[in-house]
Every structure is written in C-alpha cells, then in structure tokens.
Length: 376
Image (cartoon, rainbow, N blue to C red):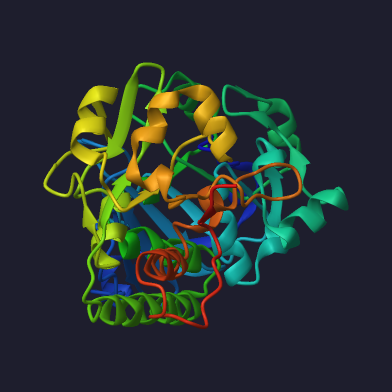
C-alpha cells in the first residue's frame, strides 16, 4: 500500500514569486488548528503558508519545511524552507492509497495524474478516472517509472519514507526534483491520522474546507465513543493474525488498539506498549486469548474454511466456535484493493461505529457495517 514519492520542479521554476524583506510581510502568521495530529503544523501568512512535517518517519531526528505560496506572493528573504510549491496545486502524483480520500473529500480528484499500483485503489470515483485513462500507472513501490512520472509534469508528488536512508529519494533530489514527505502513517491515534486532511487542504488552498471536513469526522467519532461508554456488557477481544510461526498482535497503545478501547471493549493486550505489532508464539496467544469473545482482523483469512484448513488449532478459540470473527479483508474495490487500507485512516468514525455495532449490538441500530464483516 505504501509507495514512494517525488516532486517535479519545472513548473515551479516558471512560477512568479517575489522576494521581500521581512518588514514588508505581515509577521507572524496565524497558526492553523491542528488538535490531534503530532506530525505537522501549518502557519498561514498573507499569501503563503509554511507547512512543517515534524515526524516524516518513526524516530526521525529532523523535520521538513515546505513553503506553499500563491502566485505573485511576497516572500521574506530570511524564511528558510526545504522546498517551495505554488498553490493551489493543479497536477499531483500520490504514492499511497491513504491519500486518495483526502483528494476526493476536497473535490480535487481531477488533479491526480499518476499513481504507482493503480489496482490498489478501491474508490469508485477514482477508479472511474482510471478507466477513462486520466490517471497513469507509474510502476510499483519497488520499481517506480521515474521517466514516465517526469513526463506527466506534475506540480507535486506526495509520499513517505521509513527512514533517512533512501537512495531513490537522494537520486531524485540530486536531479533537481524536490521530495515532499507525508507522515500520516506515523500517527498513533485514529483522529491524529484523519487530521492530515488539513495537510492536503493547505496544498489546494482549501484549509477552511479541510477544517470543516475533519470536524465532522471528529464529532462523529467522539459521539460514537460516548455511546459506546454506555454499554454495560464489556466483551473481551483478540486482534491480529499468524504470519509464518508468529502471531502478530497490535500493541495496546497502537492505532488498532485504541479503536478497541474507544469501542468500550477489553482488548486482551491492552496493557502492552510499543510501535507496530508484537510477535507472540501461537501457544502464548492460545493460552491468553482462547476465551476471548471476539476476534477481529484475522489477517488473510476470508472464511472459516480457510481458517480451519490452515490449522485445526484455531477451532479451540471461543470466538471461532461461536462464529464471532470479523475481517476487513472481504471489503475491496473492483480490482482487489482492500477498502480498509485506503479509507479507514481518513474515516475513523466509520471504523469505530463498525466495532461498536459488533461488540455492542443494539447501540447503533442504524449503522451498516462498512469495513468489518463476519468471516464467511
């Protein structure tokens, strides 16, 4: 799902901008509201913005500053930045499916001109543009077609990095093409990830629209959490799945773990702390979670037949015996992209409502499951 990113310079070179002394510009600017996300900040000036990405990858020791300027903007001489991009952006390349919903919510889908791995995209609206050949396939995350990407002449390409050692990015930087990082995937809280729509709002000069859209998601999430808190029966929950000889469970303080907590359920490993997932032996999980009421996110399994064919030991779990196993792997787009990977980070309110409906039937009678469905 995660892809590489690039940023094209030729269009930027031709853009008009005017450098002025700081005394000619209204300083300081207005810091825009970012309440849950820890990875970025935005400061609004008269006709430009400063967008700072603080945590481009886990454990990062540096930040990146981007100057987003309008045409004919007056830019102070002493402002420091890594790259500057003229806004609103009209041609963009994205490199992760998690960015697609932000473009759609902001009505900017028509700006997307290239993406690596088009089959991973689930959204019907974006798939319609793909079918019309309006979005170009630019390879895969490990084999990006940079020549084709450059020919598309995008104004900006957004992506991510897992560390500071990225030879592909270094090569692109040396060629004169700036790289713009997005660190939404490093956020640990559901609303923290979702708030990165404001990052895209800044690129399209739609900060007010992005603020309104995020507030609607946050309001829905917090209201659902309050409803879940009224439940009197608190079920126990197991999450995660086997990969080779290890069972990987999300940490209690992780994005996935917090969903279970906010849905007012007792996650078996809620007291664990860390990043990513914790690897445990199958025997350990069996002894600790054999009697869990529910099992969610069972990995690649789409049916109980697959589960039992993989190992008869799964039948020892209470959740399997009572058919209370729920997966997001059965909800995908027309080319097989899993909807959860694309939309869930942007719509945590829907994820939470799914889980509340599963753990506490009757609390949200009007909600129809979006991501999590019973194992077939």
